[in-house]
Length: 185
Image (spheres, helix red, strand yellow):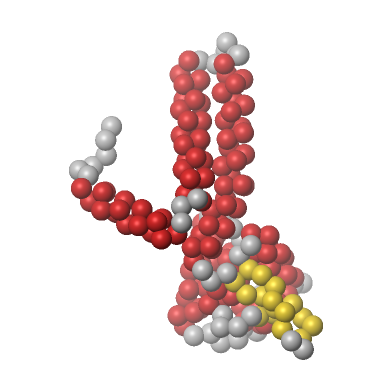
């Protein structure tokens, strides 16, 4: 049986954020516990130990330990030394632009890169396979072209300084407001 500790009382807004962050992570395919721990550390005023996290969220220590490993691998949290305390303490990256960049990089590595490799192989194989219909071949090429476009855009955005990226996003908002509504077919 997994041991679950009693939860420490959090302010209602903090608890609501942590629960929502966990739900969002779950929607994105990230374990809910991982997301909740990230949410807690993101709002925490000081680094926390795994024990503190387990007590605060009412999670099993083993679950917290595994979740911390995953968050460390994404670069969303880091270990911080505390003078006089031998335990590991953790804090979250609090620069939301860095958080978004790290999440995007992780998702690209886990989703876009393998998709590109698979699509390239499919397009190549389809060109040599007479059993593949021209329509299927065309659609594979279109999907590959789209995915490569997204990949190039992502790579370009990595090199844009943050102030210019903010300006670009704001400019995009203004441009969209001038476009006619409705979907082009």
